[in-house]
Image (cartoon, rainbow, N blue to C red; front, top):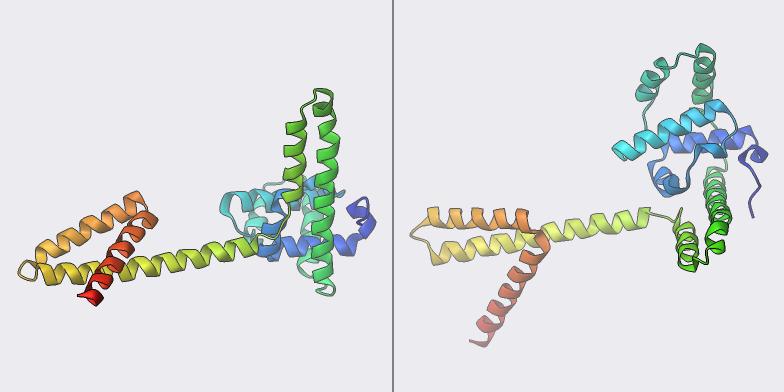
Length: 225
């Protein structure tokens, strides 16, 4: 169970949250789909959150202090500008104590707010007997804020494995062609270039499967012969 508002957690808690969003890319990645500036009461915090979200959505990484300095200069309200500078400094210097708890609590808070909003917004759908719409809205809220770092690691690992397979199979193809056309190496180079072009244009996975299948068949016949 979480508190009803971020203001109830106190300023120190909010500064730790802001500090995490500014410096911890994995934390920002996990909460991005449930992060909204209206969870924060102070205008300074809302401005910081808007900058964090805008920069992350465009560049897919955490915003830097250099960028924040530039954006601050665009503010015409000098009083707000000074206040934001102070809050940014406090956020970057926020204590690291209980940071795991703060991040987990904030993530849970955002997910609960997302679920609350989904339930409230489904009232109109209920009047129209749009039960599929209600289910989709609730399912979307339940999936929001889940840990995405594991999925990213799996994707990165799969990409590395795929590249290694392509490299090995491509080398095998090159060796086979060199043996078959050892009198005409220019032809070998040209064929390899065409194959590589197809890999890029049609996608790695299909060619990988075909080449792997051909390699497996060749090994089987070699062993049986």
